[in-house]
Image (cartoon, rainbow, N blue to C red; front, side):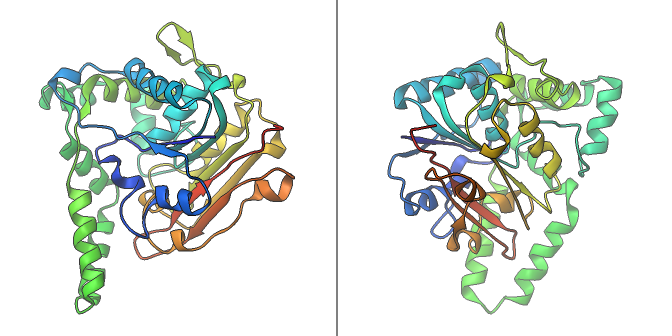
Length: 318
C-alpha cells in the first residue's frame, strides 16, 4: 500500500518533509517499515501558474494518487487540509488519512492569527490580501509569507539567536543553526489565486468546517470519509491550535474508535522537522485500540520544537 506525503506550500520548500539526516519524515516512514513512500514536491509559483487555484491543486493530487493506486494519505499544515479536501472528494482512493497541524475549522481555538481571522471574517474583506498579491505581480511572494511568520512570533527570532550565542563553541550546533536559517530564509512564491482562495473560503468563511466548500462543481462532503484517521497537533502551535485539527473528527463518518489524536509538546514547525522526536518511537493509540497493524508515532521535544514522524497502515480487513 503506497503512502503519499503532502508537504505544505505556504512559502517554504517541500524539503520540510525530508530536511536532512535525523530530521526527515520520509526516512522515518522508511525506518518504520514502509518501502513504498512518496511525497509531492511543490514548485515555486511563476507568472504562468499565478492563476492556479484549488482546482489545479486537486488535479495534481489526483494524478499522483491515480498513478499510485489507493493510498495512505499524510498531510502537513496546508498539505493536511488539502488531503482532507481530496479525501472528501475521493474517499474511495484514501485508505488512511493523517494530518498534522492542519486547520480544518479555522474559527476554532485561540492562536496568534485568530484575532486577524475573526476581524476579517466579520468584515468579509480581502482588500489587504489582494493588495499583497497585487504587490507580487499576481503572486503571493514567499518573502511576504516569511515576514508574516516572523511577525506572528517575534520572540522566536531572538530565542534562536540567544541559543546560537549560548552554543557558539559547539560546531555541530552552529552548523545546524546555519542550515536551518538558510532553509527558513529561502522562500517560495505561491499562486496569487490559490492564496486568495484559501483566505476567502477557508479562513474568512470557514467553508470546510461548515460543509459549504465547493471545488469546481462538486461540494466537498467530509461525511463521505470513513477511513481510519490520525490527528496530530502541537501544544505550542501558534498558527494552528489543536482545536482546529481535532475538528475533523466531528465532520467525518469514521467511527470514534478509529480516530486517534496526538498532542505533542511542539510549535508549528516543530511538528514537521527536528531531531529528538525522530529518534524515538512508540506505539500509536490506534494500535492499542485495534487488532489491526498500525503505526509508528514519534514525538519528543528539542530546542527548536518537537517533531513528529508518523505512519498508519491499517490492515486490509478494514
